[in-house]
Length: 475
Ligand code: FAD
Ligand code: NAI
Figure 1 (tube, rainbow, N blue to C red):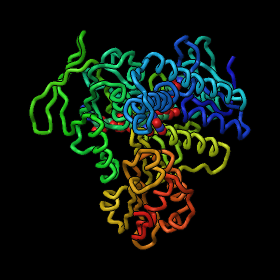
Figure 2 (spheres, rainbow, N blue to C red):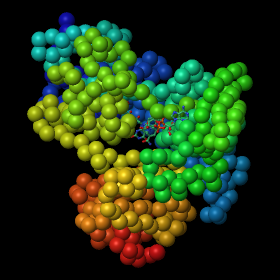
Figure 3 (cartoon, rainbow, N blue to C red):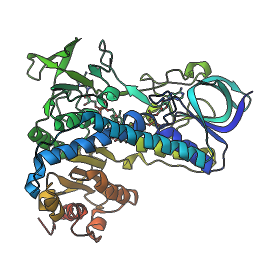
Figure 4 (tube, helix red, strand yellow):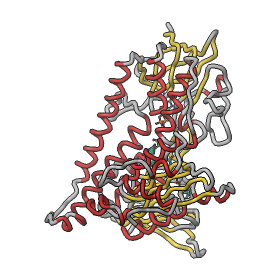
């Protein structure tokens, strides 16, 4: 006997579980199907983000940052911490607990919102009168019929051709988050977001880290001035980043991994490491979904083709998050999930792609929203720029973390904020003010005239806004 629902969501990551909750809030009869298994084979909703992404990476970043502070920065506060040791298995255990709290939290939210949860792999069987029939293959087989389907099946790590992940020596994000002991030498391919975050974790814990990056520029999507400042900080920390390399043959042996590559000067090199993390981007995931069975259109990258409103090529089938175009970010997936649920309910859900913030949780953190200086130049937009260094911010001095700056870019004529770029302490939190400001179409002067608490890092934001008009007060 099939079970009938108004909406079935496939995938319980941030795109899927949020869409399910919002649809249920709007009075619909909703099911969410997710196949992720915990180590005991039980359900572990939350997707990549909760299980092998955002949450566990931030847990390890926090633990490793504490370790680095105890080793390198406590002394300047007058604290003696001798013989500081890292118990890696305890650190990993803490991370697993944090992950489980989030898995359990989502199961609780499903109950609270009366979302029916099915643990297993969902696949399309056929279109039926007024909807779609879906099969759930799990501990128990189920057949569901849905009037509307939201696909939120996420993404998987991209492997280098000819070098599959064995999660022992050659690691994806999954293996990178559970290395059992600090490797002496760690290699990473790709100095994008994962390369920098994971490279930072294991460098702080004592690994000698080398990152090999194909592009000749560091963090090409980031504002150039901000990327330069970040690179300086990473160089100082000893995170070795080689740009403009061409990776050749990779040998995965018993003793470790040997990577042949050509450096930016065209010289042949070899990097021998104990572990290699490959972080060269992610691919949309539709494995086992049965997209072809019902004729759901995919693009050449394997992403589900959607319009601006997340409508797929089939009526009543929507798709959100990493499996569709756009940035692969948890908060982007969530916003799309909410918008789709609202559209199904006849409302006007909306996602503003121009104000999606990006954060890289390294130390210093890097965060931005809106356009970079190089994009404004390319777009031929006349702009004014204002920067303020954390070096001149009282709170940053008191924290002992004065690296970096806040940078504002505003329209030369109207003063409307076009982009805000931050490298420095708590950039991840500071960027929210800029997002709010841009959503409300604020001018730089609006921020400059708002009272900010003293002493706080947010005063650097106000000062950068003042700098647009060349009238900083503290620099
Ligand atoms: P996912 O989270 O991938 O969830 C998809 C779910 O669908 C999975 O549980 C999967 O098992 C399930 N599924 C797939 N197919 C089926 C099927 N046929 N049937 C049933 N279930 C299925 N983003 C940020 O914004 N901030 C960060 O700090 C951040 N850190 C990250 C760190 C790492 C190491 C990685 C790898 C990613 C990080 N991301 C971060 C990106 C973020 O994890 C993704 O953008 C986000 O998880 C996408 O959400 P989603 O719901 O589209 O897909
Ligand atoms: P990425 O796209 O951020 O970076 C990949 C890097 O690898 C790029 O710099 C690219 O030039 C390089 N590269 C590609 N092929 C290469 C090759 N053959 N040799 C050498 N370098 C090569 O992808 P990453 O780091 O894998 O992360 C995937 C996605 O996950 C991110 O784009 C982001 O959307 C998400 N994520 C978000 C985080 C956050 O928001 N803080 C944290 C981690 C991941």
